[in-house]
Image 1 (tube, rainbow, N blue to C red):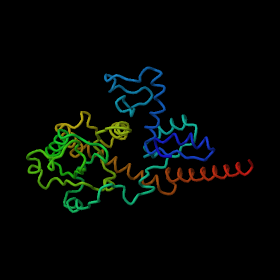
Image 2 (image 1 turned 120 degrees about the vertical axis):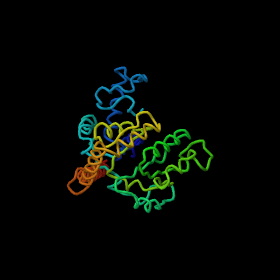
Image 3 (image 1 turned 180 degrees about the horizontal axis):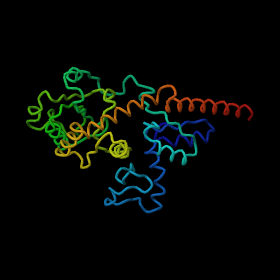
Image 4 (image 1 turned 90 degrees about the horizontal axis):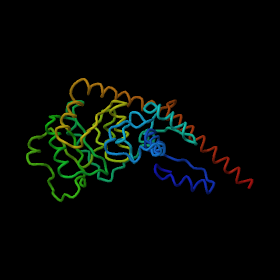
Amino acid sequence: MMDSCTFAEAVACNLKLPSIMLRTSSATNLLSYYAYPRLQEEGYIPFQDSMNLELVPGLHPLRFKDLSISNMDCLEQSSLAQLQQQCEVPVFLIGPMHKIAPASSSSLLEEDTSCMTWLDKQTHNSVIYVSLGSVVSVDEKELTEMAWGLANSKQPFLWVLRPDLVHGSESSDLFPYGFKETVGDRGCIVKWASSKKSEGVPMICRPSFGDQGINTRYVSHVWKVGLELENGLERGEIERTIKRLMVGKEGEEMRRKALDFKAKAQLCIREGGSSYNSLNELTKAHLLSLILSNYSLAFQ
C-alpha cells in the first residue's frame, strides 16, 4: 500500500490479509501527521498567517509554514526514534528507494541526453541544475524572475523547462527580451534531463506542496546541504542565493556535507547497512506473517 492509500490497511485487516504499508515520504513528514491531533487539541490548528515563522511545539526545527496540511537512518535518527515509539506496527527504513530498486526510466517526456555535450565543456562543480519537477507550474512573471536571477548570477546553468511549465501561456518563446543574448553559451535549456546524475550536490529549495516544506527545512537548517528561497521567485534573491551556494566557503561546506551524505547513502544500501538490514528484516517479517496466516486458515 503506497503512501497516502492508508485506507487499504483497514480493508486488509477486515479481510484478515497480511499487509505492508509503504510511506515514500520521510520519517519526519510522517511524524508531523501524528502531531496534528495534539496541535489541534492545544489550539494551534488552524493557525494564523502571523504564526508562519513560529516553531512548532515538539517538532523542532519545523515552523508552522513547513507543515504539509526517502528514508535513511543516517538522516533521521531522532525522528525515527519518535516514530517507532508512536507507531503500533514495526517500522522498516529501506530508502533511498531509487537506489534499491532503480527504474529504467520514470520520465513521461522523451529522454534527451544532448545536454551532456554542453556539460562536458563546463568547469567541474560550476553548473546550476534547475528543475521544478514534473508537477509544479509557474506564471510568466515567475519565469521572468527565474530567468534574470540565473542570468545575473553569472553562473553556468542547465535549465529543464517542461512544455507545460508555464500555465496559461500560449507563447512559443517564453523568455524575456534580451535574456538569451545576455546568457549566450553560459546556459543550456532542455525539455528533459536526468536528475539522477545530480546526486551528492547541495540544493536551492522552493517548496510548493506536500512534504516539500518539511524536506526544505531539514535541507537548509538540519543537514545544512542547501538554502531556501524564502520569498518565492524573485530575481534578486535568486541571484544572491546562487552566489551563496556557488561562491565562497559557505557553499564549499555544503558541497562537502552533500558528498558525505551521498557516501553514507551508499553505505546504507550495501550489505550490513541500515537499509539493507531493514529490507531483510521486512522480508523475514512478511514471510512469517504469510506462514502464520496460512497456518491459521488451515485450522479454521
